[in-house]
Image (cartoon, rainbow, N blue to C red; front, side, top):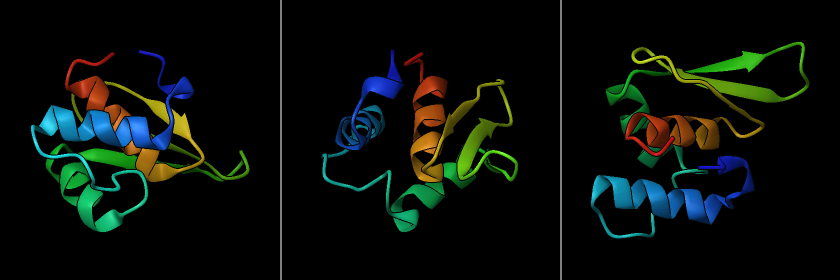
Length: 86
């Protein structure tokens, strides 16, 4: 999947679908809803201090990585990759 071309809303729909829950949560902008997934899936958010405002997200296992200026979007894309949407 080409996540770079997807809107935040499309990413949010895909996360909800992967979880089997109704659409509507703001996975790319609300830490309260995204935090439990990030914690449960052991996704690390990395700030690249030398690349103005770019964040990365990477899970503990298996190795996946995605960069975006929005750390929650990066984390949700890594979640989708982990769920087989690569």
